Length: 105
Image (cartoon, rainbow, N blue to C red; front, side):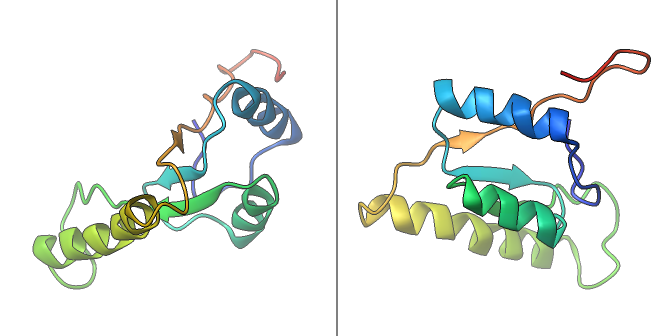
């Protein structure tokens, strides 16, 4: 699985490009703000990034409800574009990371 604070390897990008050929997603859902380098490369593939914080612990700022409101605002970007007819709501899950000891594709 891709992590927001790590830039994916070339093997992970290649795997994603293969997935996008079969499943032409327009959005990638993240649990935290991804690295800007990752956001820009995804954008080059026609995929926008959306952050949805699962908030498994007490947030450093605000409270659980403020995190949920921010999540709703993030998701409204996708819903707004879909309801206005500008895009289909196709999400892509980041390809899984290779298992430790396994070589990357």
